[in-house]
Length: 246
Image: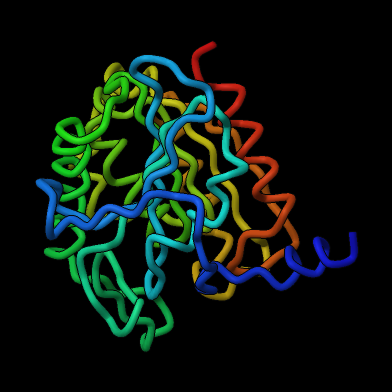
């Protein structure tokens, strides 16, 4: 029990955890645009729902995939690697600079990443069987940012998103769909009140904006920093279990 507790307390999203029991697929040999990892559904069905995991800046596809074995059995779980290489095993969806005290993004890269993720989901149909009407995104930090950007602009292609310690880019707002199109999109948001990387008001600002669009996201807040602990994971996992089709 103490070992498990220690693991969750010390967990960092950037820690690389060895993965032995899953399939790794290399985009250099496939038709998809991104490198990714796969956990097949534990409950065998035709056309299972897809859960796409999106890591934060400086991370890689193994970060959130360390949770894969504990995610709901029905999901086909895919964890994608960001297109930008920052260093050894360090990737991003777009460049960001914090020297001003506020995140300054490369807007062109952020938009390219939004399109890349949409194209990746489409191309993934050629390699894996899943229900393209039941696609969920789960992202941490910059992965949460991308989850907002993809789903809010193309809600017909995404069933639900789980945004952990992310923010909604103001640059994306002009592209966001209208209330009618957003009506069926399910949204989970979680954020640490002690987050020093993407501060807590980013979460509440995003919630307030989504409410102006007629949406009512499920929101969880924690006395934590920029990380994922056991309670955070348990909450998002319960939301996923509750919202997948039975």
